[in-house]
View 1: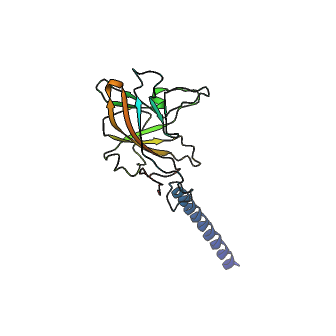
View 2: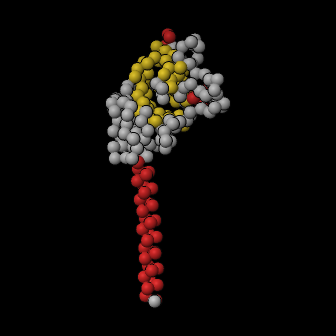
View 3: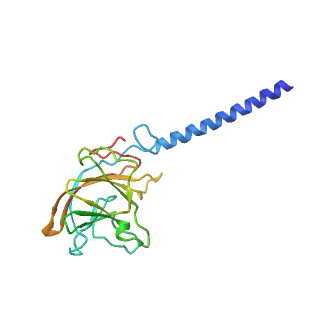
Length: 208
């Protein structure tokens, strides 16, 4: 009787440990899946990364009819405004400083308290060129703060309000190709990865 009871208790404890171990492994697998990649449980990438070059005008000293901002999730040029729904129509705006450099302004920096909230935008200066930057970092972003960018400097962008199921951000990269001071116009090159859980910042269908 005593021996049987000990065996039963041992079996129960063993089962409990195994169950807890299984749960921990399951959580780890789930967390890894949320990072994307070919081996993850997330859907494969379906949107190709495309490098785009566009002209955008300074937020100050230009006509209200000219685009001075960019919405990465739709890859569209905009003039910053709060829509009738209370939402903001852009992710970052651009301006030109007195010494001829470019200011990149996250939406919340331009419109701190929009009725429907502003997208959370993180910026990080990189040490490699636009063409050589193949993967977005996962940390080190400066959130909702303006940065000053010179010609040829590359920044990564983290867009928290992506709409992904597991709330993964979208990642993008930008660089300033040229500045036309007489027109207060900036030529920008950008690429955004709009696949949930993917970090690749190169042209084509991402695999990670």
